[in-house]
Length: 384
Length: 136
Image (cartoon, rainbow over all chains, first blue to last red; front, side, top):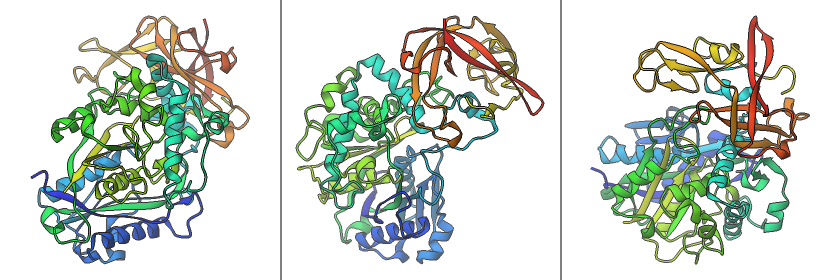
């Protein structure tokens, strides 16, 4: 039944700028998984399942390479991006709770220096399917797609450019506390943000996630199994992923455009948790770009869209003491873009009490994945 | 866009949109619902037969972005370029993407009135009429 699965360990590889990793992407995956299993106080032979999203590093190969136990579960989510991070945790929760597996590693490895760069796009001579309506116009990247959503959202709700900056500045400030962060030792000022070059209006360079190399993982197991392990167990209080009907329509014709695809996710999550946004002490909002973060903050119910400027200003989202610290490891922008799985790891750390920007008294810790793309997903973690 | 840039594939579903040089919207033959972009199945009743009816080629800019960074090397000399999302006067719930021409990208704004025009291409034996926008 739901509620029987907990997170017993977390781990990462080192994070690198694109092209900076001395290891292959597969090796990075192995490093992160080993670290997570060791952090939990388990051995590789205890692992009997894997879950991920959009990952190239198949459990069949990982299992042989790492010497896991016999595999009882593997799963990967549908969907086009980092919006699968929370959904992948859900898969592990389901596999454990339903008794199909006892120890599932959820991971994501991504080395953009070795494979496709997310900020670049190929040129198809003939654009097919959904891209037929966008690619011929040079509408090719996630930055451009999220820019189109964000431009309308800012117009409708009176959101300022400075609110985009607040997301970036909070991430960079948090990264200065985190020696694992790619941007550790590289602070950013508001003036530098505004002076940075445009990528796709309204996004400046710093609104956009970097291209990094690295891997991150968590170990999900039963509450019983976790009882005698190395770390305090972290509960998966609730998880949700999905989308509203006809919000999957192509080419910006979603009924609710502009949307981060998290209203439905938020309603599901809070109903399952028996809690609400006011009960959360800290949150990680996957930043592909800053605009979808703002949209997701409102859609998850933390404030009304028209209140966003105030919600993110005046240090309100800066940890450890802000009203709702977000992206406390530095997030995708500051710590590293591992397709958002670092946000999941950090959300777990906040409950354990070992974040580099530890918020005091954390009972509930939220991770929101991949806003701007459907289906959205989110996980709420909590004590024991 | 530059010479030899991507053009849409013409399929039974997209043919009316990309070859008629009109804003031909897809209507379900069974229930009459219109939907855009055209799909293989009616999202309302599940029907698979459609007809296509042109609406007036005018609308209002609902959102836009100006691309300053070339995400493909072939676009390096083409940035900055503007992409607009247009709500149609005759079908406000329908939003149509396209490049806007005849205006400095810095002048594009939400709410501006625009009119469609078509750029004719011949590729792989197909004629493609690509809808674009210009200030009305």
